[in-house]
Image (cartoon, rainbow, N blue to C red; front, side, top):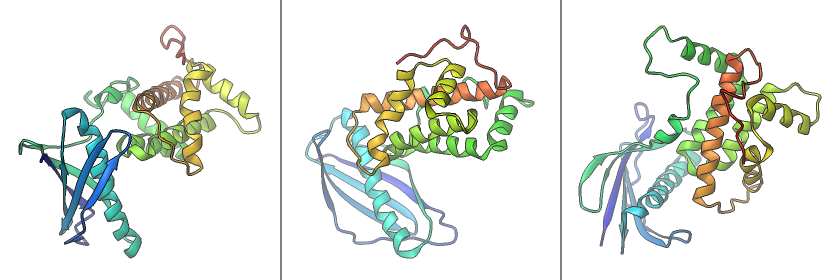
Length: 258
Protein backbone atom coordinates (compact mmCIF):
# COMPACT_ATOMS: atom_id res chain seq x y z
CA UNK A 1 0.00 0.00 0.00
CA UNK A 2 1.60 3.33 -1.06
CA UNK A 3 2.34 5.76 1.77
CA UNK A 4 3.24 9.43 1.33
CA UNK A 5 4.36 11.44 4.36
CA UNK A 6 4.32 15.20 4.81
CA UNK A 7 6.36 16.93 7.50
CA UNK A 8 6.09 20.49 8.70
CA UNK A 9 5.80 22.90 11.59
CA UNK A 10 3.22 24.70 13.64
CA UNK A 11 4.31 28.31 14.02
CA UNK A 12 5.09 30.28 16.06
CA UNK A 13 6.77 27.66 18.22
CA UNK A 14 9.26 29.68 20.22
CA UNK A 15 6.75 30.56 22.95
CA UNK A 16 4.29 27.66 22.88
CA UNK A 17 4.96 24.04 21.97
CA UNK A 18 1.92 22.37 20.42
CA UNK A 19 1.39 18.62 20.67
CA UNK A 20 -1.34 16.28 19.42
CA UNK A 21 -0.62 12.63 20.15
CA UNK A 22 -2.61 9.43 19.56
CA UNK A 23 -5.06 11.15 17.27
CA UNK A 24 -7.65 9.01 15.46
CA UNK A 25 -7.13 8.26 11.77
CA UNK A 26 -9.42 9.69 9.13
CA UNK A 27 -10.66 7.96 5.98
CA UNK A 28 -11.19 10.52 3.23
CA UNK A 29 -12.80 9.97 -0.15
CA UNK A 30 -12.18 12.77 -2.66
CA UNK A 31 -15.23 12.75 -4.88
CA UNK A 32 -13.70 15.09 -7.45
CA UNK A 33 -10.63 12.90 -7.96
CA UNK A 34 -11.65 9.45 -6.84
CA UNK A 35 -8.72 9.29 -4.40
CA UNK A 36 -9.28 7.41 -1.14
CA UNK A 37 -6.82 8.15 1.66
CA UNK A 38 -6.33 7.06 5.25
CA UNK A 39 -4.71 9.93 7.14
CA UNK A 40 -3.05 10.14 10.54
CA UNK A 41 -1.44 13.16 12.14
CA UNK A 42 1.08 13.51 14.93
CA UNK A 43 2.24 16.82 16.36
CA UNK A 44 5.06 16.81 18.90
CA UNK A 45 6.57 20.03 20.15
CA UNK A 46 5.16 21.86 17.11
CA UNK A 47 6.74 19.40 14.64
CA UNK A 48 3.99 17.73 12.63
CA UNK A 49 3.78 14.62 10.47
CA UNK A 50 0.86 13.59 8.26
CA UNK A 51 0.85 10.01 6.94
CA UNK A 52 -1.26 9.28 3.86
CA UNK A 53 -1.99 5.63 2.99
CA UNK A 54 -3.73 4.74 -0.28
CA UNK A 55 -4.70 1.61 -2.14
CA UNK A 56 -3.45 3.14 -5.39
CA UNK A 57 -1.38 6.21 -6.16
CA UNK A 58 -0.14 7.93 -9.31
CA UNK A 59 1.91 11.07 -9.84
CA UNK A 60 -1.20 12.83 -11.12
CA UNK A 61 -2.75 12.33 -7.67
CA UNK A 62 -0.12 14.39 -5.89
CA UNK A 63 -1.77 17.81 -6.09
CA UNK A 64 -5.04 16.47 -4.72
CA UNK A 65 -3.23 14.46 -2.05
CA UNK A 66 -1.34 17.54 -0.90
CA UNK A 67 -4.61 19.48 -0.59
CA UNK A 68 -6.16 16.72 1.50
CA UNK A 69 -3.14 16.38 3.79
CA UNK A 70 -2.80 20.14 4.23
CA UNK A 71 -6.51 20.52 4.99
CA UNK A 72 -6.25 17.74 7.56
CA UNK A 73 -3.28 19.41 9.25
CA UNK A 74 -4.92 22.82 9.23
CA UNK A 75 -8.22 21.47 10.58
CA UNK A 76 -6.41 19.74 13.44
CA UNK A 77 -4.42 22.84 14.38
CA UNK A 78 -7.43 25.10 13.91
CA UNK A 79 -9.14 23.10 16.66
CA UNK A 80 -6.18 23.94 18.91
CA UNK A 81 -6.56 27.61 17.96
CA UNK A 82 -10.30 27.46 18.65
CA UNK A 83 -9.82 25.87 22.06
CA UNK A 84 -6.97 28.12 23.23
CA UNK A 85 -7.37 31.45 21.42
CA UNK A 86 -3.72 31.24 20.37
CA UNK A 87 -2.88 32.02 16.76
CA UNK A 88 -1.01 29.31 14.83
CA UNK A 89 -0.19 28.60 11.21
CA UNK A 90 0.82 25.38 9.51
CA UNK A 91 3.30 24.74 6.72
CA UNK A 92 4.91 21.68 5.16
CA UNK A 93 8.66 21.73 4.47
CA UNK A 94 9.51 18.09 3.73
CA UNK A 95 7.94 14.97 2.28
CA UNK A 96 8.70 11.29 1.76
CA UNK A 97 7.19 9.95 -1.43
CA UNK A 98 5.63 6.57 -2.16
CA UNK A 99 9.11 5.17 -2.95
CA UNK A 100 10.38 6.29 0.48
CA UNK A 101 12.50 9.03 -1.09
CA UNK A 102 12.77 12.21 1.03
CA UNK A 103 12.76 15.68 -0.48
CA UNK A 104 12.39 19.29 0.57
CA UNK A 105 8.94 20.72 0.02
CA UNK A 106 7.67 24.21 -0.63
CA UNK A 107 4.62 25.61 -2.40
CA UNK A 108 5.87 27.31 -5.53
CA UNK A 109 3.94 28.81 -8.44
CA UNK A 110 6.66 29.97 -10.86
CA UNK A 111 4.11 30.64 -13.60
CA UNK A 112 2.46 33.23 -11.37
CA UNK A 113 5.75 34.78 -10.37
CA UNK A 114 6.64 35.20 -14.04
CA UNK A 115 3.57 37.41 -14.46
CA UNK A 116 5.15 40.06 -12.24
CA UNK A 117 6.87 42.43 -14.67
CA UNK A 118 6.31 45.68 -12.77
CA UNK A 119 9.43 45.05 -10.67
CA UNK A 120 12.04 42.41 -9.88
CA UNK A 121 13.55 41.47 -6.52
CA UNK A 122 16.73 40.16 -8.17
CA UNK A 123 17.97 43.52 -9.44
CA UNK A 124 20.75 45.07 -7.33
CA UNK A 125 20.12 48.14 -5.23
CA UNK A 126 19.27 50.82 -5.95
CA UNK A 127 16.18 49.15 -7.38
CA UNK A 128 13.79 52.00 -8.32
CA UNK A 129 10.96 49.76 -9.58
CA UNK A 130 10.91 47.70 -6.37
CA UNK A 131 11.20 50.78 -4.16
CA UNK A 132 8.36 52.51 -6.01
CA UNK A 133 6.20 49.39 -5.73
CA UNK A 134 6.78 49.16 -1.97
CA UNK A 135 5.84 52.81 -1.57
CA UNK A 136 2.70 52.30 -3.67
CA UNK A 137 1.53 49.31 -1.63
CA UNK A 138 2.35 50.78 1.77
CA UNK A 139 0.96 54.25 1.06
CA UNK A 140 -2.57 52.87 0.69
CA UNK A 141 -3.84 50.33 3.24
CA UNK A 142 -6.41 49.13 0.68
CA UNK A 143 -3.60 48.05 -1.63
CA UNK A 144 -1.74 46.26 1.14
CA UNK A 145 -4.91 44.34 1.99
CA UNK A 146 -5.59 43.53 -1.65
CA UNK A 147 -2.07 42.17 -2.11
CA UNK A 148 -2.42 40.14 1.08
CA UNK A 149 -5.67 38.64 -0.22
CA UNK A 150 -4.04 37.79 -3.53
CA UNK A 151 -0.92 36.05 -2.21
CA UNK A 152 -2.94 34.21 0.45
CA UNK A 153 -5.13 32.81 -2.30
CA UNK A 154 -2.06 31.19 -3.88
CA UNK A 155 -1.16 29.17 -0.77
CA UNK A 156 -4.63 28.38 0.61
CA UNK A 157 -6.61 26.72 -2.18
CA UNK A 158 -9.96 27.03 -0.39
CA UNK A 159 -9.51 30.81 -0.28
CA UNK A 160 -8.43 31.18 -3.90
CA UNK A 161 -11.77 32.08 -5.49
CA UNK A 162 -13.07 34.51 -2.87
CA UNK A 163 -9.71 36.11 -2.06
CA UNK A 164 -8.79 36.67 -5.71
CA UNK A 165 -12.11 38.41 -6.35
CA UNK A 166 -11.80 40.48 -3.19
CA UNK A 167 -8.28 41.54 -4.20
CA UNK A 168 -9.48 42.72 -7.61
CA UNK A 169 -12.48 44.53 -6.12
CA UNK A 170 -10.09 46.20 -3.69
CA UNK A 171 -8.04 47.51 -6.61
CA UNK A 172 -11.18 48.81 -8.31
CA UNK A 173 -12.18 50.68 -5.14
CA UNK A 174 -8.68 52.14 -4.85
CA UNK A 175 -8.69 53.33 -8.45
CA UNK A 176 -12.13 54.86 -8.79
CA UNK A 177 -13.65 57.63 -6.64
CA UNK A 178 -16.75 56.99 -4.58
CA UNK A 179 -20.09 58.37 -5.64
CA UNK A 180 -20.20 56.82 -9.10
CA UNK A 181 -22.19 53.77 -10.06
CA UNK A 182 -20.50 50.37 -9.76
CA UNK A 183 -20.85 49.88 -13.50
CA UNK A 184 -19.07 53.18 -14.17
CA UNK A 185 -16.31 52.27 -11.70
CA UNK A 186 -15.79 48.84 -13.29
CA UNK A 187 -15.72 50.37 -16.76
CA UNK A 188 -13.06 52.88 -15.76
CA UNK A 189 -11.05 50.14 -14.05
CA UNK A 190 -11.14 47.95 -17.16
CA UNK A 191 -10.35 50.81 -19.52
CA UNK A 192 -7.36 52.00 -17.50
CA UNK A 193 -5.84 48.51 -17.48
CA UNK A 194 -6.95 47.43 -20.99
CA UNK A 195 -9.29 44.55 -20.16
CA UNK A 196 -12.70 43.55 -21.42
CA UNK A 197 -15.67 42.73 -19.22
CA UNK A 198 -15.40 38.94 -19.60
CA UNK A 199 -11.75 38.88 -18.58
CA UNK A 200 -12.64 40.34 -15.17
CA UNK A 201 -16.05 38.73 -14.72
CA UNK A 202 -14.54 35.23 -14.73
CA UNK A 203 -12.95 36.19 -11.41
CA UNK A 204 -15.85 38.07 -9.82
CA UNK A 205 -18.70 35.82 -11.00
CA UNK A 206 -17.17 32.59 -9.69
CA UNK A 207 -16.71 34.12 -6.25
CA UNK A 208 -20.43 34.74 -5.65
CA UNK A 209 -21.22 31.31 -4.18
CA UNK A 210 -18.16 31.29 -1.91
CA UNK A 211 -18.85 34.77 -0.58
CA UNK A 212 -22.22 33.49 0.65
CA UNK A 213 -20.82 30.35 2.29
CA UNK A 214 -21.74 28.01 -0.58
CA UNK A 215 -18.42 26.36 -1.44
CA UNK A 216 -19.51 25.00 -4.80
CA UNK A 217 -16.86 22.92 -6.55
CA UNK A 218 -15.05 24.82 -9.31
CA UNK A 219 -12.91 22.84 -11.78
CA UNK A 220 -9.15 23.20 -11.64
CA UNK A 221 -8.87 24.72 -15.11
CA UNK A 222 -11.13 27.58 -13.98
CA UNK A 223 -9.25 28.19 -10.72
CA UNK A 224 -5.99 28.25 -12.67
CA UNK A 225 -7.40 30.96 -14.97
CA UNK A 226 -8.62 32.93 -11.94
CA UNK A 227 -5.14 32.87 -10.39
CA UNK A 228 -3.47 33.87 -13.64
CA UNK A 229 -5.89 36.70 -14.39
CA UNK A 230 -5.79 38.07 -10.85
CA UNK A 231 -1.99 38.13 -10.84
CA UNK A 232 -1.96 39.81 -14.25
CA UNK A 233 -4.47 42.47 -13.20
CA UNK A 234 -2.53 43.25 -10.01
CA UNK A 235 0.68 43.61 -12.00
CA UNK A 236 -1.03 46.04 -14.38
CA UNK A 237 -2.43 48.01 -11.46
CA UNK A 238 1.07 48.51 -10.04
CA UNK A 239 2.21 49.69 -13.47
CA UNK A 240 -0.80 52.04 -13.56
CA UNK A 241 0.20 53.57 -10.21
CA UNK A 242 3.84 53.83 -11.30
CA UNK A 243 2.57 55.61 -14.45
CA UNK A 244 1.05 58.38 -12.29
CA UNK A 245 -2.43 56.87 -12.63
CA UNK A 246 -2.49 57.32 -16.39
CA UNK A 247 -4.24 54.63 -18.44
CA UNK A 248 -1.80 52.01 -19.71
CA UNK A 249 -0.59 52.29 -23.28
CA UNK A 250 -2.42 49.74 -25.42
CA UNK A 251 0.68 48.89 -27.44
CA UNK A 252 2.70 48.05 -24.32
CA UNK A 253 -0.25 46.39 -22.55
CA UNK A 254 -2.50 44.77 -25.17
CA UNK A 255 -6.18 44.22 -24.49
CA UNK A 256 -6.92 41.26 -22.21
CA UNK A 257 -10.01 39.46 -23.45
CA UNK A 258 -12.12 36.80 -21.79
